[in-house]
Image: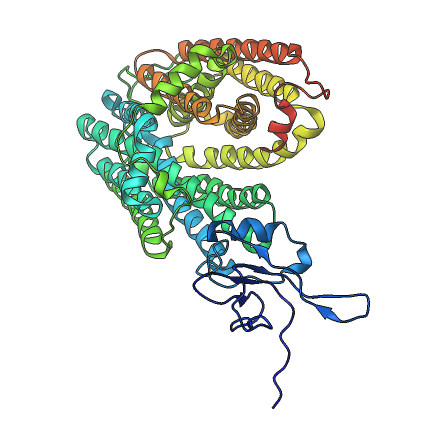
Length: 546
């Protein structure tokens, strides 16, 4: 049987072996003289003026490392496929495997934060005595501040990007377990360990999803940015629903409270702006039967353990592109870069108040609104239902505003968030909550979620737009000052009246919007480049991509 002629293709000949075609298996024939070809790329034959097929001269390649570079200069029609062992492709990672791992990471974090976010919302109500709940939350953000500066790169380099995630999830499981015996020393240690592990866990998650996006973009020839945004969008879509499931669990479990425990004799509790967290009270809204609290802790602990098992068993190991460059030693480099960036950047200094407000407002809604308004007047069981409203509005607005900003501008949204939150804080000062104003709790939670969605999405995008040349140090400052906002709010939570906390919120909000306005003015005054473009990346571009 006659052998079918080989299709024209590109072959690479080396000193050690004859050239092989990238389109067909087997060696490329030797030259007409019988000698092995000079090392290089064999280009596809072309037709001469008489219609005869003529071989093209080889494209010399002096070393194997330059092969890929040489192929890249050829026309698209020159190569129709690459061998399975080509360095640009990883045969172990196909599309279905990549999608599976995106889902596994998302599912793991969904189970983990179904437990943690809801338990955090309940800390100031369930563990009110002696400030146990707020001190444990303070410890979380204290540990997070230290961890962000030193641990993420070190831990990932030591144990790998995959195993960093379930190992650090163990800190969350430990925090859930500590709630079985909620004493101040145990809860503080558990919170500190959780915070220390949180920074490496989130860094590993981001690195893993980003690498999946890079692999998928190479397989499908799509833009890396587009693919990575889609993967992160899917992740946060699942992640945000944890507010719904976790709060549904807490409200359904705690609603089983026996009727005999519902009332106590004594004066009516003082709720709202005059509420004092550290003052003794006979308010039974905070008191829950030990059995119900234990059942809730069991459910949340199981959720955290399921998250660990999902990631440990189902997530595939991955070697990062920059694996050889990772630093296996603890280093203060990021801490030094963070401090240098703060000292040298006037823009960064001006953004400190609004960045701290991001932490202050989240801590207020999660600790003070739940305690002084919801639990005090309605009972702990209602916290979950009201925070479902908060979470749903926050998630929807985050999605919508991230796309609308390119049409109306980020300044509009910052002003909108300021007006909404300032109006709500003034309302908190005069509002006396009760079960007769039940609907108002949901309205307030929804509008606070709207403002929070703007602050989180636009502030992240603003940092990305302003500090394109020093991104890592800039976002380290972002994490530092936001975490300090959380830490400060939780530390004073049990010691001052709610109205004083509201004044502190207002101060950071007003100072923050003034600082942001000055940044806008300074950026608009910056000189233009010769081609008319701004000397820095336009803010709208950064926000629109969020």
